[in-house]
Length: 268
Image (cartoon, rainbow, N blue to C red; front, side, top):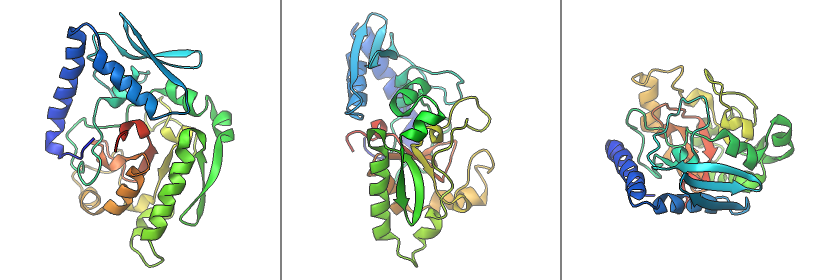
């Protein structure tokens, strides 16, 4: 995935939708099967299998088989849905890696759609099982809990190593990083019945004082404008290099939020 300007976001949505529909018209859904296999490659130790029939493309983990994309492959995601959507909905928007993506178009939220059933299979079905899968990661002098499954905790440790090299004791970067505002917390998203990615211990929130959030800050406020223009790209780059997405690239912005989603950065 290449970084792209936010002005191209709507065109990207159209192109992806056309690609899905074209696959269906060909009677094969081959492009969607390729996307499913790319998804599986992002979690190499999960044993994900891909298959298809006339009803769509599926992925399986153990005995659990889930719809990746139903025919005719024209799924439109809804980040506010209260039920699981087909897994392909989580990949609908191309995540803009790098310096782009700070002015996302309305409705552009790459990574905010999550398949809760899939997350439970990957990281733990309930709070107790997730906690058992967690290890302590040293992050800029703090000890934080993170899920050890599928490389998440190791990836956060590598992020910390990158940031330690960048952020000396006197560096202004430290003010954006510390104190952290949370990792593992089995809870729902504010205003929703859906579980947060923090429930699965695959997300970290950095210093809330430097990071506005769409549910309590106006998109046009001076605070949000400062964050959009000044949030350090070096921090974003360090996380993205290890498979994390940044909530600052969502129209429903969450500037403190970094989430382990390697399937959205596969190939970068």
